[in-house]
Image 1: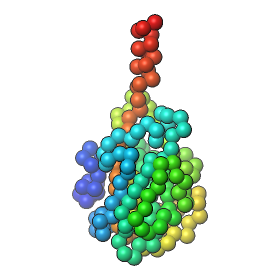
Image 2: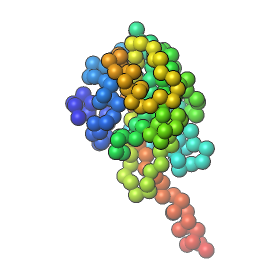
Image 3: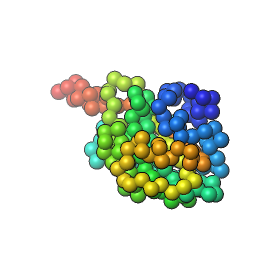
Image 4: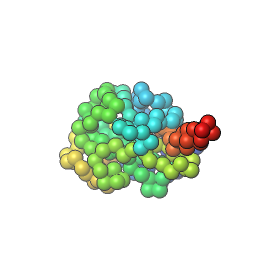
Length: 194
């Protein structure tokens, strides 16, 4: 993994050559113009709340906020990948976002969404085996120098092809998640008091 990419990701993030960042961004694009991606639901490197995962019913995508992109940006794209899985697993492909300071509310339907690793056009809820170590989810924001012409439902490969050579700036936000054993603990606790 390139030094600049290692610096863009928190210490301990798996070095995954398949991440979109490796294919789409360059060192000079990282945080260019002060571009920043944040979430009111978690700080960078913190754990995702289960309400954004398959561990809770009625789970939704987490809220995201971003600063204004550099002048000349025509569109913003969000890509979310699990850096701890083979591939890596693509959880969200979003484009059609206006090139200005903005946000996606919790559970909000984005303008355009592509196919995740399961082939669905929606937020792919993290569903991890209970014995897995914590996974690192890499939320990536890209500012492009041209508007996208992709229709909703495009694949990751189609999105990458359309973005290649057009990334002006990029920003990264990471979160971790580990499947909870709480249910098992509650069941054991209930048995203890029976």
